[in-house]
Image (tube, rainbow, N blue to C red; front, side, top):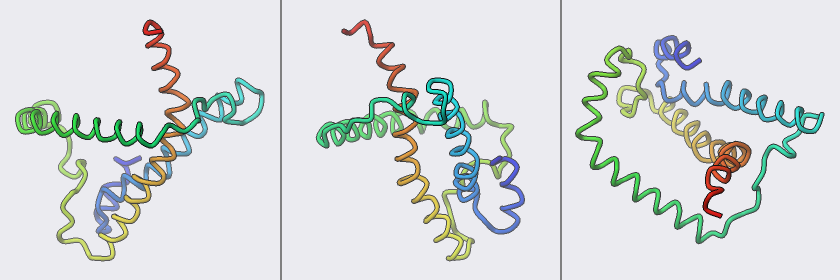
Length: 155
């Protein structure tokens, strides 16, 4: 959907970051909901998330903050060490075929102020509220059981 929407929306003067967020809201969220509710229908006979979304209990704030900080430090270290060396090489070799309009725009110069504000507002909603809630639902349904199953040898 993103690939189909970017060229016409760029002609309208909208950045591709806005297009990506709109495509995520319009396609990704309904598709994942359909998959999760379909799994609920298989398990219980009705469209529900009961039995599909597991591990919904809250974790202590100190664990959440510690995990987020640790991952942030790890990510910063990896990106700062690897990005200057590997990023140009990967862009020139593996992704040389990608059109110039495809990568997300991070520079909003030349866009009207209203378009920039709209893009940043939609991005804030998508990356903070929607993504956080959605990640919680889909992680509990898919990733946590798989992680626990793969870590069974630790018990």
